Every structure is written in C-alpha cells, then in structure tokens.
Image 1: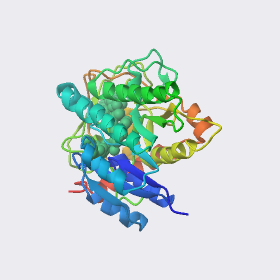
Image 2 (image 1 turned 90 degrees about the horizontal axis):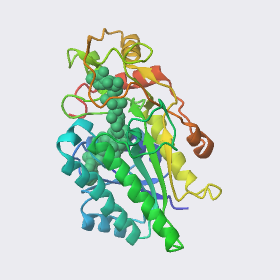
Image 3 (image 1 turned 135 degrees about the vertical axis):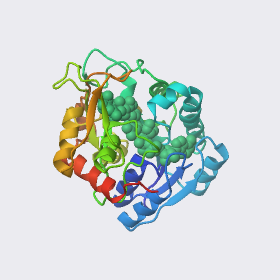
Image 4 (image 1 turned 180 degrees about the horizontal axis):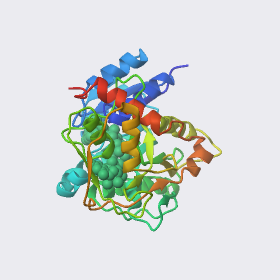
Length: 349
Ligand code: NAD
Ligand code: WQD
C-alpha cells in the first residue's frame, strides 16, 4: 500500500517540524510548504536526521496560488496540516494588515486550491486565544469564540469561521465529497523533541514565557520580567496550561485518524489540546531552577495588557473523541526545553 501524503504548511516552524517527525515516524509521506519567514530549512534537515527519512520541501508562500496549484498537481495529497501563519500577539496589534493578509488570505488561497483538487481534509492550528476573556478559567469548546482581544487571535477566529462556512456550504449543496476539518485549539506549547535537535527558535527577544526563561537560564538574557504579581491565582502570577510539543503533535495524528472514523462523522469540529492543568509563572521558574540547577534572575513588574489571570483547557472532548491526552509532565517539558536550549544556544543560527 502506498503511504498517504500529507501537505504540512509551515512545516519548517516550531510545531510543524515536530509534526513532520511524528508523521514520518507513523509512516506518512510529507510535503512541506514554507516561505521560511519565521524559520530555517535547517529544522527540516534535522527532521531527516531524527527520522532517517526524507521529505519534500517546497519554498513558497501559501498566498501564491500558482505555487500551491503546482504542489497539488505534482503530489497526490491526502490531507493538509495547516500550521503556516504569523503568531506574535504584540506585533499583530501594530501590523494588523500583515496578519490578516498572511493568516486569513493565506488560508483562503489554500482552501480554494484544495477545493479545486478535491482535497478536503484539513487539520488547522487554532489557539485558545479565540476564547478571548470568558468568565471562567477552564475553557471548553462550547464557549463562544468571538472575544479574541488582538488581530492575531481574531485572525484565528476568522479562519475558524471561514472553515465552518465551507462545511455549511457542503450541507447546502449536498456535496458528495464534503470538507472534513478539525480545528485544534492549542493552549501553551513548550518543550522540544527528546533528541535536542529541533525546538523553538524565536527571532530576537522572545515574547513568550518559556523561551524567555530558557534564554535567561542559558545566560543569553539577564533577567525575566514577571508580568504581574497580584493576580487572584495560587501565588499572584499568571497561570497557563503548558503542553509538550510532542504531545501536541500526537494530537494532530489522532485528529487525522478521527477524520476516517465514520462513527464521528466529523465535518468541521473544534477540539482543545491542553493538559487540563495550569502552572503559574513562579512554578515554571521553579521547575527551570530544579531541572537546570541554575538560578533564574527575575523581577515582578506591572501586568502585561491583554493578559488574563488564569486559564487551562477542558481536554475532555479530545479524550472522548480523539482518544488523546497529554502524557508528559512539567519536568519532561522543562528537561526537553533545556536540552534543546543548551545544545543550541543560538537556535538554528
Ligand atoms: P512558527 O512561526 O515557528 O511556524 C510557522 C511557520 O509558518 C514558519 O515556518 C513560517 O515560516 C511559516 N509561514 C508563515 N507564513 C507563511 C506563509 N504565508 N506561507 C508559507 N509559510 C508561512 O510558529 P509555531 O509556533 O510552529 O506555530 C504554528 C501554528 O500554530 C501557527 O499557525 C500558530 O499561530 C499556531 N499556534 C501556535 C502557538 C504557540 O504558542 N506556538 C499556540 C497556538 C497556536
Ligand atoms: C504566559 C504567562 C504572562 C512573558 C500566548 C498567546 C497565545 C498562544 C500562546 C499562539 C503569562 C507571563 C510572559 C514574560 C511573563 N500563542 N509572562 N514574562 O500570553 O498565555 O499566550 O502564547 O496562539 O495566543 O497569547 O503566553 O508565554 O506570553 O505568557 O511573566 O516575559 O507568562 O504574563 O501569565 P500567553 P506567554
């Protein structure tokens, strides 16, 4: 039997490169399309080292319809894992056009070409950010998703809407070959492949907590600013649901399998990918100190605007329907982050 071929958009990036490893190890063939706007091809060279397998990299932008058409003409694609997108919350607030152009328009071009080639299975990288600021700390999929507070989050909510509309159109037209789409709402991905060969390689000074703390631990940055010490949480600092990137990509493989489960009959459905448990900023710092044996220099400063005090996933739906749950704990996440960071202090550079 020939292997199913998966098109991975944004496959050279942090999560996409881990997805490539998981797909190749599970016996899929992989075609990556990436414009390397936030990544390096070296990540995919390392994917090959880890797996001992090859993949195809097409250097192109997903907004380039002709390039996508060529990919679908040349390769018999079974399904698309759609990671390509810009993801920096603060940057999206000052460059909204760029974010909507890249994320929303890029997805429109991609889905248009997929539809032309009758490839209608997609796993989309959404985000817990689509929940905005609900009145609860435990987010389940039935919460409304129109409260995103920044253009990045809104672009994810808009894409979810577009994908739901594609599915509705199939119902209206009684399509014989309907779209099958899973929207995966990630909580806070961290960690790296156990080999230490691939991991998160942010450009410039990191915006997110984990890459910042690990760069303090490795001596690249002097001090972490802890944004707010007076939240109504366990120790006053923000609480989030951190999920190991390897668990996260296993959730994508589970989603791919679920599309073939006729008892689920998925047309367009959202699932949270999180651990269902939160850790505070100070707990993350303590875990890094424990694992690395280094002291993390930090200072509590003002809250960051747009932050909520606490959130974590209700991961029950993914367990019941995708048969997926996280397997790794906080120490695993920190150990793997640290192996990647200490072996590659300058990332792929
Ligand atoms: P990343 O920046 O490491 O990877 C994204 C990849 O997409 C990069 O390789 C980039 O070069 C590529 N890309 C961007 N725009 C493109 C375009 N127009 N055409 C072709 N390639 C393009 O980010 P990541 O952390 O791996 O995130 C992957 C996806 O998951 C993104 O859609 C992101 O919004 C989403 N997500 C990430 C997080 C997180 O905290 N990392 C959380 C929730 C959701
Ligand atoms: C985590 C906690 C901060 C940095 C973001 C996006 C979200 C998703 C994941 C893509 C918070 C605190 C942080 C620092 C700190 N990405 N912090 N000092 O904000 O939960 O989620 O990334 O979809 O959409 O919004 O993650 O890592 O930035 O913050 O104290 O230097 O760490 O206040 O409590 P966040 P984060």
